[in-house]
Image (cartoon, rainbow, N blue to C red):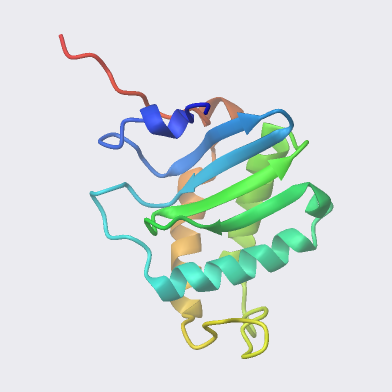
Length: 157
């Protein structure tokens, strides 16, 4: 089994950003890291869940919808994974930026948050999700393709 770049990333210095977690032929997994691991409070379940709904709905309506395989939360609640097919890093970074800007500006009924569409429709928090999206948008605003590598463990001298 191939080792993912995430396995060698130094979690002690990992900052919020966008990272390439793995590449397998034309499929790329992006780590959308919103929180510093083990150093800052994780996303609440309700904010994470709401962001998942808003961003999934947004991604499904973009011109790149056919290139999106999966968008979902990390079990650690420090961010999300986005899996794409045949989509360049440049387009993906811009897509992530626009998705979080959309979530930041979103008002209205949370997409697919009904009893029939969601297995946990009572656990949502739109104001908190918007605040998290706004904070993350400010972090990634100037991020480019060259910022997508994880920080790696360094040898102690």
